[in-house]
Image (cartoon, rainbow, N blue to C red; front, side, top):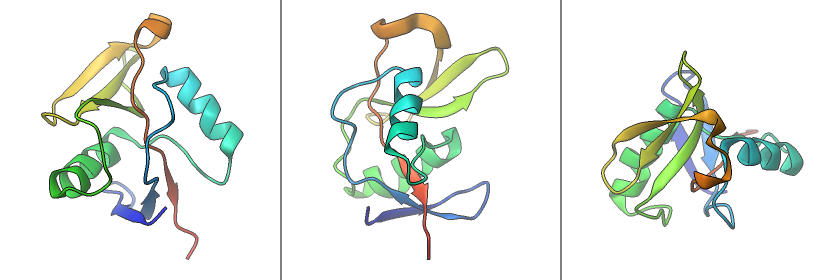
Length: 113
């Protein structure tokens, strides 16, 4: 991981994985994959994903697809958010839609420096 962003909520420097997960995942699958990989990897928050869109994708860094990327953040009503990397638009989806709604996933982790 050599791409970095600064979390707008914590000020922490985060490493952004240079590639997407090998396949699109549901939120539950993405969280499980992060837990399996370990090493502090996790889904980005909504705010962090928006920074990735603005600071990396719009500047041609990170080889992102023009598709919806999943974040960890849930709304108070149980919906999860994604950011469309074609337009920057935030959308929300009911969490239990299952395998019909698969998303691109790009993980982050706190730097250890």
